[in-house]
Image 1 (cartoon, rainbow, N blue to C red):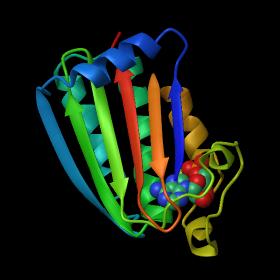
Image 2: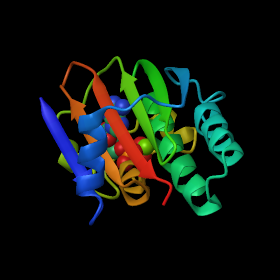
Image 3: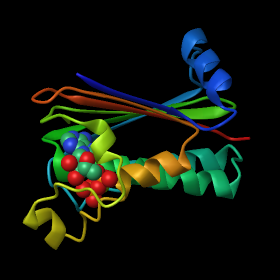
Length: 163
Ligand SMILES: Nc1ncnc2c1ncn2[C@@H]1O[C@H](COP(=O)(O)OP(=O)(O)O)[C@@H](O)[C@H]1O
Ligand SMILES: [Mg+2]
């Protein structure tokens, strides 16, 4: 079992408080992601961005959410056997939980290193595999939590505050 926990400087208390109080989301959105389904990858991030736009979230925040969610979506499409994107929208933040059915990650720290990629030739031919997805997710989130087991599934949780 490998775990990775990151909070942006100054955001740790807010993120912890949110995770401990477990409030009820105002809107929830669910998407399933198929293995190697690059045609539909990007649907969840696009829809979620629109939903946040409708409730008046700032465009700079929309961009951060879209980037983080898109990279997570692409990772499930490219590296996993399929999975789910579940978004919980709150008045002050969005939480995106991405789960997949495997094959899991052995060393998450290594996967966070810019340029590290295990993408197959097929995935590279599709234009992915630069090894910048996870670093980009980290750069755009206020909190990032990843839990994975080699041979098991991966759970990735993203929290982004609107202000
Ligand atoms: N959902 C996942 N399941 C299994 N491995 C993953 C998953 N997401 C990321 N990885 C691993 O982390 C590596 C780095 O991911 P990332 O930074 O997004 O780069 P890239 O997707 O371009 O390879 C991947 O190459 C893969 O080995
Ligand atoms: Mg990636």
